[in-house]
Length: 255
Image 1 (tube, rainbow, N blue to C red):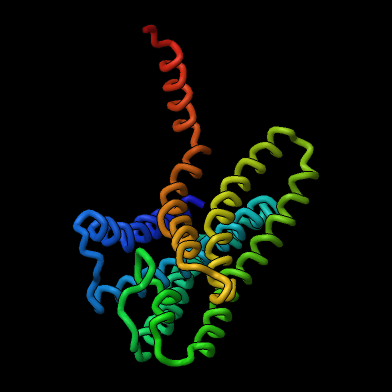
Image 2 (cartoon, rainbow, N blue to C red):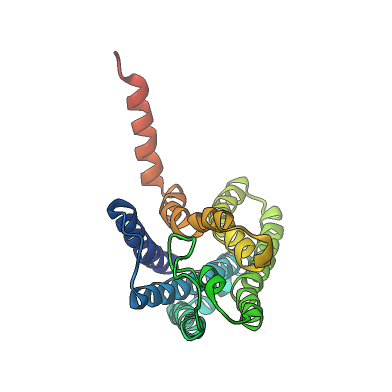
């Protein structure tokens, strides 16, 4: 689990670094532009990291499923080799998907203004500038999002359905609390990440507005990667102990 969490942390750090520095520079300098090469590089990294994180969250759900439902088989079914295969597979599939979408988006003709209503090079926003019918590509986006979001979400839901059933049968109250605590943190992260992402890319573009897309994008590009370390660290006893001591000190301060 800690091996998978370390990879999730790496993805989150790179996720924010892909979008936030350029966005902050554009805002502070007033120069709201980016080179074509920079735009392509940003799109490629964003899609690669997004796909890798979606699959990695599914791997973490499988890890919890094996740990709770098949604890005796855990060393075999979740060995270091198996974890490494999951992580490498997530990165490879995310990168291949990103290459396909980025390559297509940057070879179609654009005949309108090069200004998009977004704070990063989102391919969906770029398609509004295309001077050709992109419905076929939008269909491939729907298929791709289904593979990277819908199918993993079904797998996560099935895993946690089995986990909750197993937890409800545990005789130990302490064991149930620990299992619920472990599952709740991951489900919180999955909800924050999957919900806005799925709504944005599975919702027909004709029913969305640029403002709505930008608000939802803030969740899966900035807020969720920032909140992930906080959400997972709340399960750490040392972190919780430090927070309790801080609260006690605040209450004990005399003015």
